[in-house]
Image 1: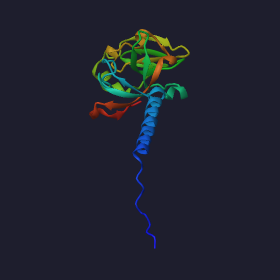
Image 2 (image 1 turned 90 degrees about the vertical axis):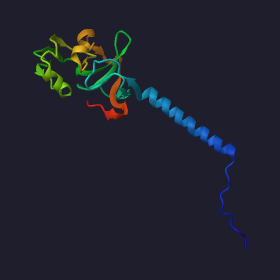
Image 3 (image 1 turned 120 degrees about the vertical axis):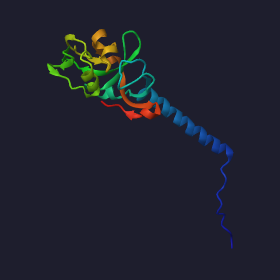
Image 4 (image 1 turned 60 degrees about the vertical axis):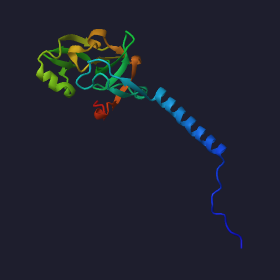
Length: 185
């Protein structure tokens, strides 16, 4: 009677190495594709989005969402500013909207904008929102403001920005570890 060989045949080291090389190459290609076309890291630099974002926080920016749809009001976006820096700001107005700031309130199309993301700051400081004359947002642009209205270079100074300048939407804070969370939109 013949005995069955139940032990597996060893895989030659050459084949094992080749399998590892293929797996690492595929992983590397996926990382490059995801990084280039879908998600990008961004580091917050400056006080313009306090208290919701602080210097040194690292975010994941969704680069593909705005190739599918336009930004919505209230979303936090990263965009290329005119001076060559990337800014992180909140979308306040879209084409055709009118924006005005008076009496410490932001008015969107004649109605007070509910900004729960900075409600405590506005309540505590009667001058948090400095007056700004009414503007109608032109076609193909958006109006963005920092959450820290007293210390933000935004559309009040640089004007509405073209949609083509948008890098993506800030979706996730991944650093520091104690602040990991999805971004409130």
